[in-house]
Image (cartoon, rainbow, N blue to C red; front, side):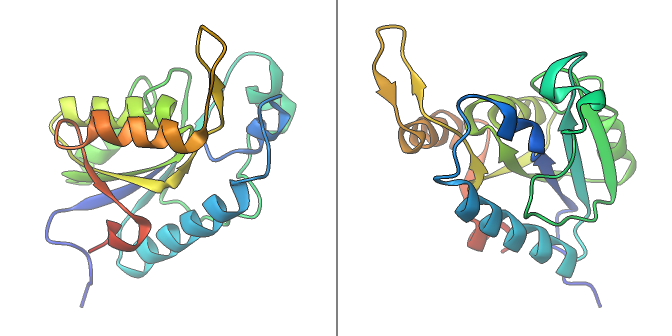
Length: 183
């Protein structure tokens, strides 16, 4: 007997890769707690028979290039994905084959997690919604870093997550926690 949800669902793990450790904005402050929550989500998806798609961002040069050796799963996360996709744009659904795979699997709902909250995760959520998927955005299983406004004010990672939830919730996604994502 399967514990999988009534709506065929897949977990999308966006850009959880060592490449980010090579960026100047990287810091460990929130990374360990993020990795722990993400691991709970990955393990829960596997326990419920929910397929997991791992997405890697790739670029021609630098730490996101395949040649760099950094396009590997971010430690200490362990994942045995059902499928792996490589993307070159912000949305995991552009040019990666992910949309085709989701359609072939009969998936109608996606759980979005990964790095960065307001960039590739948010873009993927919006795109998935526009394609007709039900989207559950698992904010606490996303990671981002402080940014600066054009005027120089630092915006904290918490503020960025709050802003992302505000613009997605009820429009493009249903905001859930790791604990509620599989309910």
